[in-house]
Length: 229
Image (cartoon, rainbow, N blue to C red; front, top):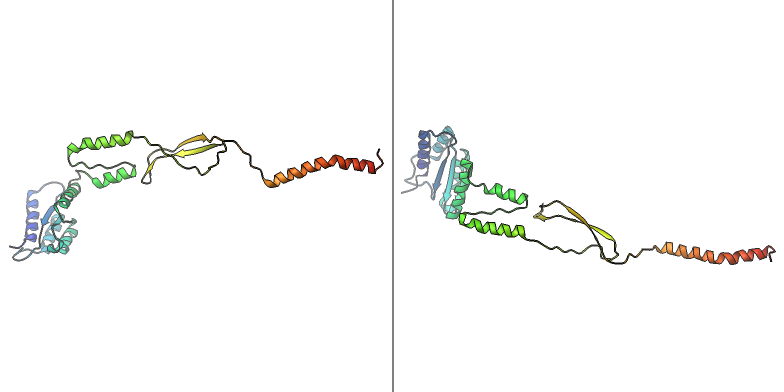
């Protein structure tokens, strides 16, 4: 026969209401098809109204091909009751959906999104181990990264070897995130200090030197002009 999606969702609501469980309650509905004849006796609207009355959100999961699922109705049932709609095209995607639901409904489990964000913002890495047997491999990889040393070379913008001291600031970044404080140091470049001379000053000094050289001869000529011996 056809899929009785709405009847099944309504029955889940009634069973949960009868259990009178304290705390947060929700109904998870999983289907791989449309509600078709002979199908449900109840309508989607009736299910929505009952869920709203009980304050139970509906989490609707569509499994398989999208064309075989009435996504529009399932999304409406989820949205109008405070739940969510998920589509799982394969078994692996379904696994991730159930994991997300576990976090959302029970506030436990592993919040991968926040852990990844925390790792990225601090310059670290997020490791996902579905099997505890893989943990030693992750620890070995992490230890290898932490124990590694690196040699970094760079071309200075000042290419002349003039023997002057130069300053350098060093910090470590990954993905635009700074991982360390800024370290400062000075280093000397081997070479000879060559003073730079402005050509105008150079010409001025030459002119002044010429004046000094010509001054004695000029003084003697003046002395003779005014009757000196």
